[in-house]
Amino acid sequence: MLEAAGALAISLADPGGEPVLEPTPGAAPLWSEVVVTALFPAGTEPAALDAALRAALTVDLPELSFEVVEERDWVREFRENLAPLRFGSRLWLCPPGMACPDPSGVALTLEPGLAFGSGSHPTTALCLAWLESLPLAGGVVLDWGCGSGVLVLAALALGAGSGTGLDIDPQALEATAANAARNQLTARLRVARPEELAAGERFDIVVANILAGSLIGLAPTLAAHCAAGARVALSGILATQAATVRDACAPWLALSLAGETDGWVLLAGTPA
View 1: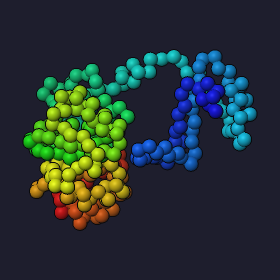
View 2: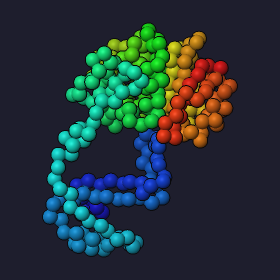
View 3: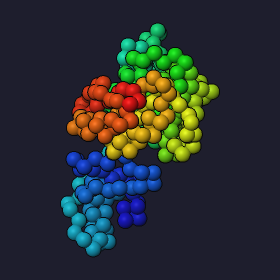
View 4: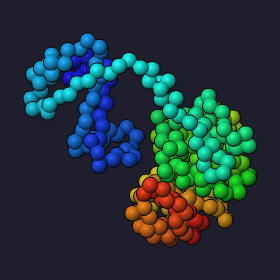
């Protein structure tokens, strides 16, 4: 009805306290209460719009609020607020068009697109700092649930020999491939769906930044793809879930707390 009334854009948002962390591809989950915001062209009459919507609905509408949005260059303002981010002592994530502040640092240019992984979320930051602390030279890396590709590409930039980014979301695979090309890392990267991973493939570094329930279910699979002496890191885990995830994964992965930020943790270790 908002579209029929002339809305240029419509957003649905959580009023708070009910996060949707990882919907499956194609799913559009809603919250028990939803904040609906619509953008209309300048000159739209609020009273007439209010009356039209109430006439069209068979249920009572809450009170509607209206405000004028001044014309601004939103893309320019968004980019002005971006800045390079450092992880560990030498890894930098840089927005497109921005140079690395540290000439001796390792820079990765990242455009997340529609995929998760800009470096700003605590779980991504924990994984990046962990990767930066490892001796990666020549290693083979697996990033399960790669999103934007930030983790596997960071590992490659830090010296890993080759990497595989897996995801069930086609948009994530597209974003990862685009970011690899942006950083001249395409030749050392493979992007694929999980079912395309061969049973006999083994990796020196395995990282998965998804959600606790998915990590528990994946534990035997991740362990099966670990080479001898492999290092493993799991994140996307709330601090309150850490013990549950560690214990549930114990038959396959020997994990311990390796970092915590803003209520999120990183568990790291080796195959059991």
